[in-house]
Length: 225
Length: 301
Ligand SMILES: Nc1ncnc2c1ncn2[C@@H]1O[C@H](COP(=O)(O)OP(=O)(O)OP(=O)(O)O)[C@@H](O)[C@H]1O
Ligand SMILES: [Mg+2]
Image (cartoon, rainbow over all chains, first blue to last red; front, top):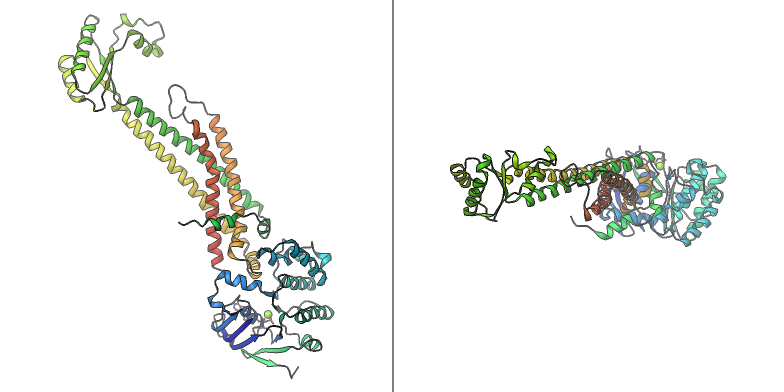
């Protein structure tokens, strides 16, 4: 699905990431951790084609991102659900329309999809906030809305960047449960977080690999958690 | 330029959702509508001016082509003889198709605007006029003048085409200027819409980024902007054309003496031409916005 081969990335200064190799196998569950500023968000951006590696190769669904044109990137993104660290909503549209935005832009704004939307919104507990505008939501509500938007197209892969960054422990457990549930339904999940307690809690529910970015490289962690 | 029809219809296809993703901007919208309206209003006048001067040039060219007047001033006693002589000379001149002395009634009609209806032309020393029509090949004006000078010193050949020619070419020039004005008007409209579209794109950078993140193609994003500006330009131009047409209708119609000022009204099928202005405005807005959007979007990832 998503494959990285000896990937390096630099924003223009020195190399931020170097020699990263990873294959996200279908149905796998990954945590990505590391100190703030280590490059977790950057890594995820490489995984959904928002950044092009400065070295090595990133393949999305067997296509080199360097060879994808702008439409190709757009199509690939419809197959990857991304929960952005800063959520990224259209503030002038109600929550429900924000969540169904991927449907609209991919021309699937049909009735069946609308039913899907209702179900999804109650699943993330936002049914009663459907007509609110994004700035009116609490931090946790925003993150649940972002998750719902990432899921609306039933993507095969879900990349979540600090999905529990703004919420209390209980809510973070609920969000985690949602992601674990999705993984049980066969989705590939990767969660970037610096919250180690979240990773520990997850271990009871799911077989997860924990990756750590440290010293510009990707390492397999686990035993020390 | 190759026009991809599928891309055009795709850009304009009805999708209210695509419009909603970009927040409404009341101010730029009104400004665009106003600009398109004002430009369309001006375009109607430029069109009217151009068509009117074209008609005028053609009228003058046709009506006056090959006509001249011979004016004979002589003492009353010799008038008839000199007129007879002049007609003989003219009939002997190659290139003259017809020469005819005007009747006193016709001369009176010509003078009437200045002296009133009861002028006794016969008893006044009024010159006798002879209307001359030339053949397609024309006569030798200078040769004729020399001969007249020698035989009839009181005769003056007044060649209309000679002094109307600059008028005809001026009218032609005016017509060209009218078309140039129309081109400039649409060029300005395109430039202004490009500016407005660029401003809208810059103001919505955040929106565009979100749309890209959720997998929108450039075409989808551009469509939201293109549809809006095309609609605004067409609406504004429609209103501008209506106002322009109303103003033209209120102009005085062409009198018997059709000049530039009295002949500005459209004639016959030409009344339909201004209806093309909103269409053209829409095309210009479509192209300008699409160009601006694709340029801005191409610079993002
Ligand atoms: N667009 C950019 N241009 C230049 N530098 C950037 C850019 N985005 C991020 N960086 C830098 O790259 C480094 C890694 O950023 P990144 O957002 O990937 O970190 P992170 O691991 O996600 O951090 P956090 O846990 O705080 O979210 C940081 O030092 C950041 O300042
Ligand atoms: Mg981050």
